Length: 361
Ligand SMILES: O=c1ccn([C@@H]2O[C@H](COP(=O)(O)OP(=O)(O)O[C@H]3O[C@@H](CO)[C@H](O)[C@H]3O)[C@@H](O)[C@H]2O)c(=O)[nH]1
Ligand SMILES: [Mn+2]
Image (cartoon, rainbow, N blue to C red; front, side, top):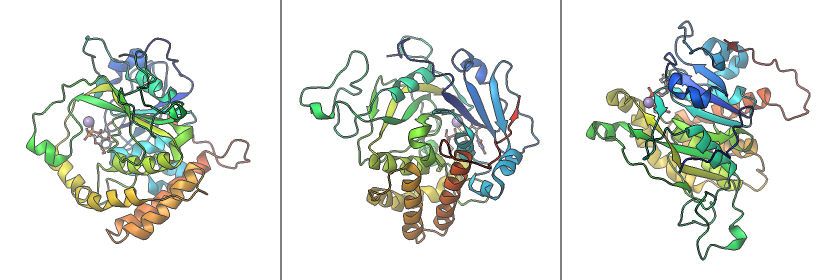
């Protein structure tokens, strides 16, 4: 069911982050929904390339030169030539909420033929609680026309604050390269009208294509890792962020929802290129998943940053044997937190950091 008009716009509390190597004509289709919002465009690849942004959008644009200027040596933690660069946008934003979307994602239609305002549904998901501690079989109990079912403990009906809203995709599904190679013509035409909380203790494959989160609740955990140029892995940026985020939201009693809203994913990237990028990830994840399933964070880890630094320590101690890459990644996780805290000092803290001067329109 589409979000009701009672859902607040949050236009001054939410930034839209778009990683891109292309012109942003796709925004024309989103104009009715996105125009009120501020966009943070993270231009990947050649900084000399001029990215055209349609008239009438309020945006700031950062290319690699900007990232290097703003972060200095800490820019080493931001990937190059991979959509992982989008996390720089999360760091420079000053808003409470983030919505990130790929530039080949368009407005989808619901079964009634109505355009789906994906942003409105994500806001609805984020503003209502999650139910990670006990599964509600009638899906999201907080949506109109649903509720907790018989046997659901009343002591748990307040739910938990929602940190992440994970949307899905019609048309081109987010398959890995082997699946794409085996099923090149498969399209996702199934519109499932549901929003589910991912139960505590369960990991999930987070896709960065259509994703919203509460930056104040979980922002520092949304590091998309070292991917792309010069790295032995790609297309595991969002997966890494999702696994780190999930163990931290479980520890901090926060919730993650998946399901509505859908976007229309229009472009299948090259499966052979994807296979090269994903190969190590497909292999390594058989060891990464047991690692994340066994992560225990100490009770003293009461903030996302503390959880994340503890996680980086465990990555360094336990995953270095999988591949030396994880030693580098563990260091980059620490650099990410240092950069995050430098650009986002606690409220009231005296700072000497220069505000990032973006290349706005
Ligand atoms: O080097 C690059 C390549 C792409 N981008 C931008 O990132 C997104 C996603 O790119 P694209 O749609 O071409 O790739 P997909 O395979 O469909 O993306 C899926 O894989 C994930 C990659 O980890 C991604 O999050 C998934 O959606 C577009 O906006 C490109 O412009 C880039 O910045 N740098
Ligand atoms: Mn795509």
